[in-house]
Amino acid sequence: MALALTEALLSQIAHSPLFVATDLRVAPASPGKAERLLPLLARPQLTLYVNLEEAGILCQCRFDDSPRRGLIARGAARGGTDGPRAADGIGGSIISQRCPPAVAGDPRYRCRRYVHGRALGGETPQSRAEAALTAALEAASRTFRSWPRTPLHYSPEVRAALDAGAPVVALESTIITHGMPFPQNRDTALMVEAEVRAAGAVPATIAVMAGRIHIGLTADELDRLVLVKDAMKLSRADLAVCLAQGRVGATTVAATMICAHLAGIAVFATGGIGGVHRGAESSYDISADLHELSTTPVTVVAAGAKAILDLPKTLEVLETLGVPVIAYGQDDFPAFWSRSSGLRAPLRLDSAADIAAAHLMRGNLDRAAGSWSPTRYRSRQKSRAARSTHSSRSPCPEARVQASPRRR
Image 1 (cartoon, rainbow, N blue to C red):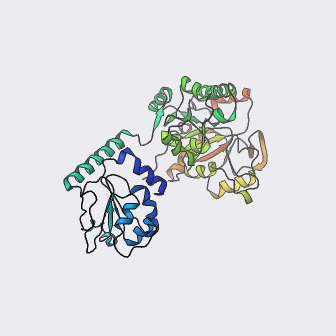
Image 2: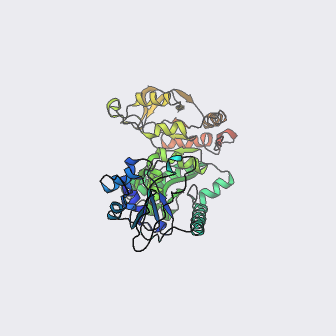
Image 3: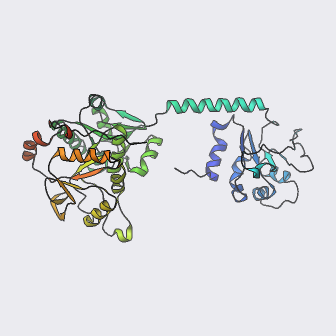
């Protein structure tokens, strides 16, 4: 993530209590960026290093000699130069003429004219600067140690299942917050979790709440989520921002894959994935789900891509990205609501064990990507009859898909 030091951000730094005791020294990378430093001029405990050209930009005038008076007029408490004359004192305080310390490896900053911020009270002693730096480093270290690198929060049921090596199936949460109104959203979430349990696995509904990725929801957490009106709809681009701001977010296919992989879950079930929208040749509207399938090693079981999409183009993009699209038990590619889209699926496998074996082999080939198994719609009666053969409780060891560790 790139973060530009804009004038607005520098203004926040100038007024932030985190920098009150910091001996902060700033030099613009080029004269064109000098104007951004205006909010910092009156900042206590700050030293700005500027040359005559940069000082002129800050003061909006041209200087042939010392820019001291102009800089003071713009908010600096006192100024100094490395020229032949020492700067006049402000309130009896005199600034040293010596150049700022050299920047390692960059001789451009060895002799720059400079201006001190307000309330510095003269040159900061070396010992004081070292003490401030040491305190800042210790504070940063404590913060880093206390902040989880991946803020995962497991429900007790999911945690116990993963510790025991039991099968776990990830579920998305967008349908809860964006797909249906209350109470249908809650009822649907419970029914989907019940189907996973009936097949012998543990459901892990994934959502972001209070700055954490929840891997599995307790009854109380689900009750809170179904009533949220302003939940963010999270894909790869939104996930980090939602976590950092402590907001509530529901995961789409792409975000659910990311979170499932972080949690060590290799199988994810959903209704339909996103894809290439009709008219994408002019709108470029293509779901991030397709790219995620090519980069995150999670097998997604779904009823196909959403029927409103351009399905031929969706299959072409998946082929280009190297995503294996495996039809389960049929040759036709399903279309979400329909058993057949009229298109032939690129691949066909007829058992959960075969799909699991393909997933594991893909990991052995060091392909850090997922696969997609669109499955045909089956009636509830046929589904129950088939569970003994195609469920996670199959005696075939290949049927239990485990997360494949990435090589580093």
